Length: 129
Picture 1 (cartoon, rainbow, N blue to C red):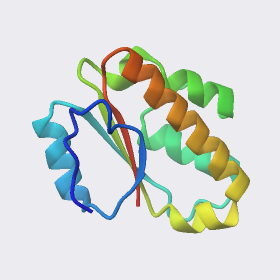
Picture 2 (picture 1 turned 180 degrees about the horizontal axis):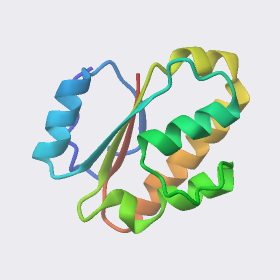
Picture 3 (picture 1 turned 120 degrees about the horizontal axis):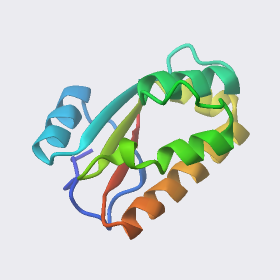
Picture 4 (picture 1 turned 60 degrees about the vertical axis):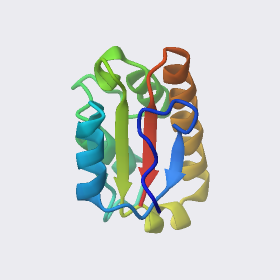
């Protein structure tokens, strides 16, 4: 996959991607976007998924480890910074296949966050690898 222009609000959102981690991190830095790399290898439950997201996104200690709390944290000003955010969800295939309903819920939350930030003129990108 060719890396999109990360400052493009219209293209921002959740995308399947095979972009190399280093290339994505470099492009994020060049666009002045915050970059988070969330490792989902070995994640085998909703709770483990939420823990991996909390760790990878550096969510606050008071993160409630549930879908509503995740949605709230994704719409917090601290996450997107001044220019927007790029999130890479690495090693997602196994969880996505084994927990289709949870994955669908996660994607809906991520899509809603992307719309939230788009309304504030900040790109919110999620690359699922």
